[in-house]
Image (cartoon, rainbow, N blue to C red; front, side):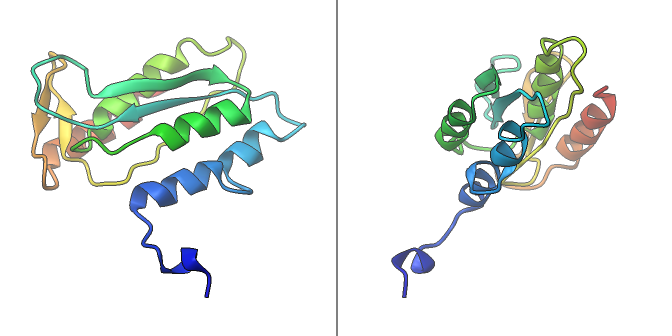
Length: 147
């Protein structure tokens, strides 16, 4: 049997393959000659370190390079809780710098349940090790606000 078949895949590994694997999102979007596309990658996690809106990192700004995008996706590491709210908030922010007439989409991928959210000041709140209803509601509200 193939050695790879015996290795456990994490949720993060599966998400990375969805984007970077053969026939994945980067292939389907950036290798499609009928589409003039660019993609960006925003990574998000969650921690209580007293800094506002700090749970997000722009791993790759707008690019049409499949190799750059895949490299950025492969570099993403799990770093604590899951602040889906902050990820969507910054995803919406980066859309503001997209080409003016471009069609814009947010493809949201997560390896966990929402455990953190940012309050009105941008400070992280929530529960690191379990589902947080406030985090889920903040995430839903943020997703609805993206236009």
